[in-house]
Image 1 (tube, rainbow, N blue to C red):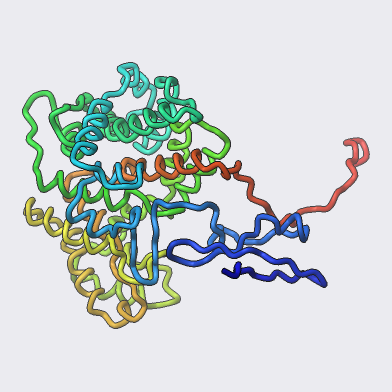
Image 2: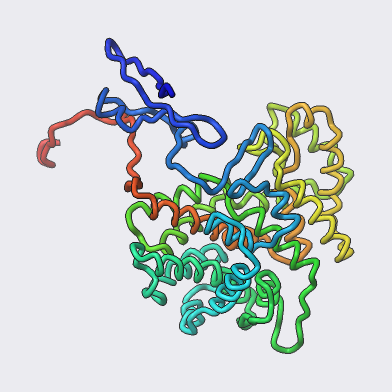
Length: 428
Protein backbone atom coordinates (compact mmCIF):
# COMPACT_ATOMS: atom_id res chain seq x y z
CA UNK A 1 0.00 0.00 0.00
CA UNK A 2 1.34 3.43 -0.97
CA UNK A 3 2.12 5.60 2.01
CA UNK A 4 0.30 8.92 1.77
CA UNK A 5 2.32 12.10 2.13
CA UNK A 6 1.80 15.84 1.97
CA UNK A 7 4.35 18.29 0.62
CA UNK A 8 5.47 21.45 2.39
CA UNK A 9 7.25 24.06 0.28
CA UNK A 10 9.48 26.72 1.77
CA UNK A 11 11.60 28.71 -0.63
CA UNK A 12 13.53 26.25 -2.74
CA UNK A 13 13.12 23.41 -0.25
CA UNK A 14 10.34 20.84 -0.28
CA UNK A 15 9.78 18.40 2.58
CA UNK A 16 7.40 15.46 2.75
CA UNK A 17 5.01 15.14 5.67
CA UNK A 18 3.56 11.69 6.41
CA UNK A 19 -0.23 11.59 6.53
CA UNK A 20 -1.77 9.69 9.45
CA UNK A 21 -5.31 8.40 9.19
CA UNK A 22 -7.66 7.75 12.09
CA UNK A 23 -10.45 5.21 12.30
CA UNK A 24 -12.93 7.93 11.35
CA UNK A 25 -12.61 11.67 10.99
CA UNK A 26 -10.04 13.93 9.29
CA UNK A 27 -6.54 12.71 8.50
CA UNK A 28 -3.58 14.63 9.92
CA UNK A 29 -0.23 15.70 8.50
CA UNK A 30 2.60 14.64 10.82
CA UNK A 31 4.68 17.80 11.34
CA UNK A 32 6.86 16.52 14.19
CA UNK A 33 10.03 16.81 12.05
CA UNK A 34 9.05 20.06 10.34
CA UNK A 35 11.22 22.31 12.54
CA UNK A 36 14.23 20.04 12.23
CA UNK A 37 13.89 19.87 8.44
CA UNK A 38 12.97 23.50 7.73
CA UNK A 39 13.70 25.57 10.83
CA UNK A 40 10.04 26.68 10.82
CA UNK A 41 7.07 26.22 13.15
CA UNK A 42 3.40 26.18 12.23
CA UNK A 43 1.17 29.00 13.51
CA UNK A 44 -2.21 27.89 14.90
CA UNK A 45 -3.70 30.11 17.65
CA UNK A 46 -6.02 28.07 19.83
CA UNK A 47 -4.68 24.87 18.21
CA UNK A 48 -7.94 24.64 16.24
CA UNK A 49 -6.22 22.91 13.30
CA UNK A 50 -3.69 20.90 15.29
CA UNK A 51 -4.08 17.36 16.62
CA UNK A 52 -2.22 17.42 19.93
CA UNK A 53 -2.49 13.70 20.61
CA UNK A 54 -3.75 10.35 19.41
CA UNK A 55 -6.80 9.15 21.33
CA UNK A 56 -9.27 6.26 21.34
CA UNK A 57 -11.74 7.77 23.79
CA UNK A 58 -14.14 10.26 22.20
CA UNK A 59 -15.05 11.18 18.63
CA UNK A 60 -17.02 14.24 17.53
CA UNK A 61 -18.33 15.09 14.08
CA UNK A 62 -19.69 18.59 14.50
CA UNK A 63 -21.10 18.84 10.97
CA UNK A 64 -23.19 15.68 11.37
CA UNK A 65 -24.01 16.15 15.05
CA UNK A 66 -22.26 12.96 16.20
CA UNK A 67 -20.71 12.25 19.62
CA UNK A 68 -19.25 8.81 20.33
CA UNK A 69 -17.79 7.48 23.58
CA UNK A 70 -15.46 4.61 22.63
CA UNK A 71 -17.55 4.19 19.47
CA UNK A 72 -20.96 4.21 21.19
CA UNK A 73 -23.42 7.01 20.26
CA UNK A 74 -24.19 9.24 23.22
CA UNK A 75 -27.95 8.90 22.75
CA UNK A 76 -27.80 5.09 23.12
CA UNK A 77 -25.70 5.33 26.28
CA UNK A 78 -27.95 7.98 27.81
CA UNK A 79 -31.11 6.05 26.93
CA UNK A 80 -30.07 2.62 28.16
CA UNK A 81 -27.06 3.04 30.47
CA UNK A 82 -26.09 4.98 33.56
CA UNK A 83 -23.23 7.26 34.53
CA UNK A 84 -21.01 4.70 36.26
CA UNK A 85 -21.34 2.34 33.29
CA UNK A 86 -20.19 5.26 31.12
CA UNK A 87 -17.30 5.87 33.51
CA UNK A 88 -16.21 2.24 33.16
CA UNK A 89 -16.45 2.49 29.36
CA UNK A 90 -14.35 5.65 29.19
CA UNK A 91 -11.72 4.31 31.58
CA UNK A 92 -11.35 0.76 30.28
CA UNK A 93 -12.51 0.93 26.67
CA UNK A 94 -15.37 -1.59 26.83
CA UNK A 95 -18.80 -1.78 28.41
CA UNK A 96 -18.71 -3.79 31.64
CA UNK A 97 -20.24 -7.20 32.20
CA UNK A 98 -22.74 -7.46 35.05
CA UNK A 99 -19.98 -8.70 37.37
CA UNK A 100 -17.58 -5.94 36.34
CA UNK A 101 -20.28 -3.31 36.75
CA UNK A 102 -21.18 -4.53 40.24
CA UNK A 103 -17.51 -4.51 41.26
CA UNK A 104 -16.91 -1.04 39.80
CA UNK A 105 -20.02 0.39 41.48
CA UNK A 106 -18.92 -1.15 44.78
CA UNK A 107 -15.42 0.34 44.55
CA UNK A 108 -16.70 3.81 43.65
CA UNK A 109 -19.32 3.76 46.42
CA UNK A 110 -16.77 2.71 49.06
CA UNK A 111 -14.48 5.60 48.15
CA UNK A 112 -17.05 8.42 48.43
CA UNK A 113 -16.02 9.55 51.92
CA UNK A 114 -13.20 12.07 52.21
CA UNK A 115 -10.62 12.34 54.96
CA UNK A 116 -12.23 13.90 58.03
CA UNK A 117 -9.57 16.62 58.13
CA UNK A 118 -10.98 17.90 54.85
CA UNK A 119 -13.93 19.28 56.84
CA UNK A 120 -11.54 21.53 58.77
CA UNK A 121 -9.82 22.44 55.51
CA UNK A 122 -13.12 23.95 54.31
CA UNK A 123 -13.28 26.25 57.32
CA UNK A 124 -10.41 28.27 55.86
CA UNK A 125 -12.65 29.59 53.09
CA UNK A 126 -14.93 32.59 53.30
CA UNK A 127 -18.60 31.66 53.43
CA UNK A 128 -19.27 33.60 50.23
CA UNK A 129 -16.42 31.95 48.29
CA UNK A 130 -17.45 30.72 44.85
CA UNK A 131 -17.87 26.90 44.97
CA UNK A 132 -15.52 26.56 41.98
CA UNK A 133 -12.76 28.32 43.93
CA UNK A 134 -13.33 25.84 46.73
CA UNK A 135 -13.23 22.93 44.26
CA UNK A 136 -9.93 24.02 42.70
CA UNK A 137 -8.32 24.19 46.14
CA UNK A 138 -9.87 21.07 47.69
CA UNK A 139 -9.25 18.77 44.70
CA UNK A 140 -5.64 19.96 44.50
CA UNK A 141 -5.34 19.28 48.24
CA UNK A 142 -6.40 15.64 47.82
CA UNK A 143 -2.80 14.79 46.93
CA UNK A 144 -1.82 15.89 50.46
CA UNK A 145 -4.33 13.46 51.96
CA UNK A 146 -3.92 10.55 49.55
CA UNK A 147 -0.23 10.57 48.70
CA UNK A 148 -0.30 6.77 48.47
CA UNK A 149 -1.85 7.11 44.99
CA UNK A 150 0.31 9.78 43.37
CA UNK A 151 2.97 7.55 41.78
CA UNK A 152 1.90 7.83 38.15
CA UNK A 153 4.35 5.09 37.08
CA UNK A 154 2.44 2.49 39.13
CA UNK A 155 -0.69 1.20 37.32
CA UNK A 156 -2.29 0.16 40.62
CA UNK A 157 -1.84 3.64 42.08
CA UNK A 158 -3.21 5.16 38.87
CA UNK A 159 -6.30 2.98 39.24
CA UNK A 160 -6.74 3.90 42.91
CA UNK A 161 -6.35 7.62 42.16
CA UNK A 162 -8.89 7.35 39.33
CA UNK A 163 -11.41 5.59 41.56
CA UNK A 164 -10.90 8.09 44.35
CA UNK A 165 -11.49 11.13 42.18
CA UNK A 166 -14.63 9.80 40.50
CA UNK A 167 -15.96 8.86 43.95
CA UNK A 168 -14.91 11.90 45.97
CA UNK A 169 -15.68 14.76 43.57
CA UNK A 170 -19.45 14.61 44.30
CA UNK A 171 -18.72 14.61 48.03
CA UNK A 172 -16.45 17.65 47.74
CA UNK A 173 -18.97 19.39 45.48
CA UNK A 174 -21.77 18.81 47.99
CA UNK A 175 -19.52 20.03 50.81
CA UNK A 176 -18.76 23.21 48.83
CA UNK A 177 -22.48 23.80 48.39
CA UNK A 178 -23.38 23.10 52.03
CA UNK A 179 -20.55 25.35 53.23
CA UNK A 180 -21.75 28.21 51.02
CA UNK A 181 -25.27 28.11 52.53
CA UNK A 182 -24.16 27.53 56.11
CA UNK A 183 -25.56 24.03 56.52
CA UNK A 184 -23.74 21.04 58.05
CA UNK A 185 -22.04 18.54 55.78
CA UNK A 186 -23.96 15.38 54.98
CA UNK A 187 -22.02 12.13 54.78
CA UNK A 188 -22.51 9.78 51.82
CA UNK A 189 -24.53 6.57 52.19
CA UNK A 190 -23.39 3.29 50.64
CA UNK A 191 -26.92 2.06 49.90
CA UNK A 192 -27.60 4.88 47.41
CA UNK A 193 -26.55 5.11 43.79
CA UNK A 194 -24.10 7.75 42.57
CA UNK A 195 -26.49 10.59 41.73
CA UNK A 196 -28.99 9.82 44.51
CA UNK A 197 -26.11 10.01 46.96
CA UNK A 198 -25.07 13.38 45.58
CA UNK A 199 -28.59 14.83 45.75
CA UNK A 200 -28.94 13.67 49.33
CA UNK A 201 -25.57 15.20 50.30
CA UNK A 202 -26.72 18.51 48.75
CA UNK A 203 -30.28 18.74 50.03
CA UNK A 204 -30.64 16.61 53.18
CA UNK A 205 -30.60 18.25 56.61
CA UNK A 206 -30.14 16.53 60.01
CA UNK A 207 -33.58 17.50 61.32
CA UNK A 208 -35.60 15.41 58.88
CA UNK A 209 -35.43 12.45 56.51
CA UNK A 210 -34.65 13.14 52.88
CA UNK A 211 -36.18 10.98 50.19
CA UNK A 212 -34.51 11.08 46.78
CA UNK A 213 -36.85 11.74 43.86
CA UNK A 214 -35.99 9.10 41.20
CA UNK A 215 -36.88 11.48 38.35
CA UNK A 216 -34.35 14.02 39.67
CA UNK A 217 -31.74 11.33 40.20
CA UNK A 218 -32.15 10.00 36.68
CA UNK A 219 -32.04 13.53 35.23
CA UNK A 220 -28.78 14.29 37.01
CA UNK A 221 -27.38 10.91 35.92
CA UNK A 222 -28.08 11.85 32.30
CA UNK A 223 -26.54 15.28 32.83
CA UNK A 224 -23.37 13.60 34.09
CA UNK A 225 -23.31 11.16 31.16
CA UNK A 226 -23.74 13.90 28.58
CA UNK A 227 -20.86 15.91 30.07
CA UNK A 228 -18.51 13.01 30.82
CA UNK A 229 -16.10 13.76 27.96
CA UNK A 230 -15.93 15.98 24.90
CA UNK A 231 -12.63 15.24 23.16
CA UNK A 232 -9.71 17.73 23.33
CA UNK A 233 -11.50 20.79 24.71
CA UNK A 234 -9.80 23.50 26.77
CA UNK A 235 -10.03 21.81 30.18
CA UNK A 236 -9.12 18.35 28.86
CA UNK A 237 -6.13 19.80 27.03
CA UNK A 238 -5.18 21.55 30.28
CA UNK A 239 -5.27 18.24 32.16
CA UNK A 240 -3.14 16.56 29.49
CA UNK A 241 -0.65 19.44 29.42
CA UNK A 242 -0.32 19.46 33.20
CA UNK A 243 -0.02 15.68 33.24
CA UNK A 244 2.67 15.69 30.56
CA UNK A 245 5.10 17.11 33.13
CA UNK A 246 4.51 14.14 35.43
CA UNK A 247 2.31 16.06 37.86
CA UNK A 248 0.12 13.94 40.14
CA UNK A 249 -3.44 13.27 38.91
CA UNK A 250 -5.12 15.29 41.67
CA UNK A 251 -3.16 18.40 40.63
CA UNK A 252 -3.98 17.74 36.97
CA UNK A 253 -7.73 17.53 37.62
CA UNK A 254 -7.54 20.69 39.77
CA UNK A 255 -5.96 22.40 36.75
CA UNK A 256 -8.82 21.11 34.59
CA UNK A 257 -11.37 22.54 37.04
CA UNK A 258 -9.63 25.92 36.92
CA UNK A 259 -9.82 25.91 33.11
CA UNK A 260 -13.46 24.80 33.16
CA UNK A 261 -14.33 27.72 35.43
CA UNK A 262 -13.92 30.16 32.53
CA UNK A 263 -17.24 31.57 31.24
CA UNK A 264 -16.31 30.63 27.66
CA UNK A 265 -16.11 26.96 28.70
CA UNK A 266 -18.05 25.64 31.69
CA UNK A 267 -20.06 28.74 32.52
CA UNK A 268 -22.27 28.73 29.44
CA UNK A 269 -25.38 27.34 31.14
CA UNK A 270 -25.11 30.03 33.81
CA UNK A 271 -24.98 32.62 31.01
CA UNK A 272 -28.24 31.19 29.63
CA UNK A 273 -30.09 31.94 32.87
CA UNK A 274 -28.67 35.47 32.97
CA UNK A 275 -29.97 36.00 29.44
CA UNK A 276 -33.42 34.64 30.36
CA UNK A 277 -33.48 36.98 33.37
CA UNK A 278 -32.65 39.91 31.08
CA UNK A 279 -35.53 39.01 28.75
CA UNK A 280 -37.79 38.75 31.79
CA UNK A 281 -41.17 37.69 30.40
CA UNK A 282 -42.36 35.76 27.31
CA UNK A 283 -43.97 38.83 25.74
CA UNK A 284 -40.52 40.50 25.49
CA UNK A 285 -39.00 37.65 23.46
CA UNK A 286 -39.73 39.19 19.99
CA UNK A 287 -37.71 42.26 21.01
CA UNK A 288 -34.69 40.11 21.83
CA UNK A 289 -35.12 37.91 18.76
CA UNK A 290 -34.86 41.10 16.69
CA UNK A 291 -31.77 42.19 18.66
CA UNK A 292 -30.16 38.80 18.04
CA UNK A 293 -30.72 39.15 14.29
CA UNK A 294 -29.25 42.68 14.22
CA UNK A 295 -25.54 42.46 13.41
CA UNK A 296 -24.95 45.87 14.97
CA UNK A 297 -26.53 44.90 18.28
CA UNK A 298 -24.15 43.36 20.87
CA UNK A 299 -26.89 41.12 22.29
CA UNK A 300 -26.43 37.41 21.64
CA UNK A 301 -28.78 34.53 22.36
CA UNK A 302 -26.90 32.32 24.79
CA UNK A 303 -27.43 28.57 24.54
CA UNK A 304 -28.00 28.56 20.79
CA UNK A 305 -25.52 27.14 18.32
CA UNK A 306 -22.19 25.56 19.27
CA UNK A 307 -18.56 26.08 18.34
CA UNK A 308 -18.15 22.40 17.47
CA UNK A 309 -21.63 21.33 16.38
CA UNK A 310 -22.84 22.89 13.13
CA UNK A 311 -25.91 20.68 13.35
CA UNK A 312 -28.19 19.87 16.29
CA UNK A 313 -26.07 19.11 19.37
CA UNK A 314 -26.78 15.37 19.91
CA UNK A 315 -26.67 15.91 23.67
CA UNK A 316 -29.30 18.66 23.47
CA UNK A 317 -32.01 16.28 22.23
CA UNK A 318 -31.54 14.08 25.29
CA UNK A 319 -31.31 17.05 27.66
CA UNK A 320 -34.46 18.55 26.12
CA UNK A 321 -36.46 15.43 26.98
CA UNK A 322 -34.90 15.30 30.43
CA UNK A 323 -35.81 18.94 31.05
CA UNK A 324 -39.45 18.27 30.20
CA UNK A 325 -39.50 15.22 32.52
CA UNK A 326 -38.13 17.31 35.41
CA UNK A 327 -40.55 20.20 34.84
CA UNK A 328 -43.50 17.81 34.59
CA UNK A 329 -42.46 16.00 37.78
CA UNK A 330 -41.98 19.17 39.81
CA UNK A 331 -44.85 21.15 38.31
CA UNK A 332 -42.59 24.17 38.53
CA UNK A 333 -44.01 27.58 37.67
CA UNK A 334 -41.21 30.02 37.06
CA UNK A 335 -40.99 33.12 34.85
CA UNK A 336 -37.55 32.19 33.57
CA UNK A 337 -38.69 28.69 32.65
CA UNK A 338 -41.71 30.13 30.85
CA UNK A 339 -39.37 32.41 28.90
CA UNK A 340 -37.08 29.49 28.06
CA UNK A 341 -39.89 27.26 26.78
CA UNK A 342 -41.33 30.02 24.59
CA UNK A 343 -37.89 31.06 23.31
CA UNK A 344 -37.15 27.47 22.35
CA UNK A 345 -40.47 27.18 20.51
CA UNK A 346 -39.89 30.36 18.52
CA UNK A 347 -36.27 29.59 17.64
CA UNK A 348 -37.06 26.08 16.41
CA UNK A 349 -39.60 27.50 13.92
CA UNK A 350 -37.89 30.74 12.89
CA UNK A 351 -36.33 30.58 9.40
CA UNK A 352 -33.39 32.75 10.49
CA UNK A 353 -32.32 30.28 13.18
CA UNK A 354 -33.06 27.23 11.04
CA UNK A 355 -31.01 28.61 8.12
CA UNK A 356 -28.05 29.42 10.37
CA UNK A 357 -28.46 26.16 12.29
CA UNK A 358 -28.73 28.00 15.59
CA UNK A 359 -30.41 25.18 17.47
CA UNK A 360 -30.69 25.14 21.28
CA UNK A 361 -27.59 23.41 22.64
CA UNK A 362 -27.07 21.36 25.79
CA UNK A 363 -26.27 24.45 27.88
CA UNK A 364 -29.70 25.91 27.13
CA UNK A 365 -31.52 22.90 28.55
CA UNK A 366 -29.11 21.98 31.34
CA UNK A 367 -29.31 25.42 32.92
CA UNK A 368 -33.11 25.23 33.00
CA UNK A 369 -33.03 21.71 34.44
CA UNK A 370 -30.53 22.46 37.21
CA UNK A 371 -32.43 25.59 38.21
CA UNK A 372 -35.69 23.65 38.39
CA UNK A 373 -33.98 21.08 40.62
CA UNK A 374 -33.16 23.82 43.11
CA UNK A 375 -29.45 24.22 42.45
CA UNK A 376 -28.01 27.77 42.42
CA UNK A 377 -26.22 29.02 39.32
CA UNK A 378 -22.89 29.04 41.18
CA UNK A 379 -23.12 25.24 41.34
CA UNK A 380 -23.71 24.66 37.63
CA UNK A 381 -20.03 24.58 36.66
CA UNK A 382 -19.26 22.50 39.75
CA UNK A 383 -21.66 19.82 38.49
CA UNK A 384 -19.98 20.04 35.08
CA UNK A 385 -16.65 19.37 36.83
CA UNK A 386 -18.06 16.36 38.68
CA UNK A 387 -19.28 14.91 35.38
CA UNK A 388 -16.12 15.70 33.40
CA UNK A 389 -13.75 14.22 36.01
CA UNK A 390 -13.99 10.75 34.47
CA UNK A 391 -13.19 12.18 31.02
CA UNK A 392 -10.18 14.04 32.39
CA UNK A 393 -8.97 10.92 34.17
CA UNK A 394 -9.47 8.70 31.11
CA UNK A 395 -7.56 11.18 28.94
CA UNK A 396 -4.81 11.56 31.55
CA UNK A 397 -4.52 7.79 31.92
CA UNK A 398 -4.33 7.32 28.14
CA UNK A 399 -1.56 9.92 27.91
CA UNK A 400 0.47 8.39 30.77
CA UNK A 401 0.22 4.92 29.22
CA UNK A 402 1.27 6.17 25.76
CA UNK A 403 5.01 5.42 25.30
CA UNK A 404 5.25 8.18 22.70
CA UNK A 405 3.88 10.89 24.99
CA UNK A 406 6.11 13.92 25.58
CA UNK A 407 5.98 16.95 27.84
CA UNK A 408 3.88 19.67 26.25
CA UNK A 409 5.89 22.54 24.79
CA UNK A 410 3.94 24.78 22.39
CA UNK A 411 5.98 27.15 20.23
CA UNK A 412 5.41 30.80 19.47
CA UNK A 413 5.79 33.50 16.85
CA UNK A 414 7.94 36.07 18.64
CA UNK A 415 7.06 39.67 17.73
CA UNK A 416 8.90 41.54 20.52
CA UNK A 417 12.13 43.54 20.43
CA UNK A 418 15.32 42.12 19.00
CA UNK A 419 18.34 41.75 21.27
CA UNK A 420 19.26 45.07 22.90
CA UNK A 421 22.19 46.19 25.00
CA UNK A 422 21.47 46.89 28.63
CA UNK A 423 22.03 50.48 29.78
CA UNK A 424 22.85 51.05 33.46
CA UNK A 425 20.48 53.32 35.37
CA UNK A 426 23.03 56.17 35.38
CA UNK A 427 22.99 56.35 31.56
CA UNK A 428 19.22 56.21 31.00
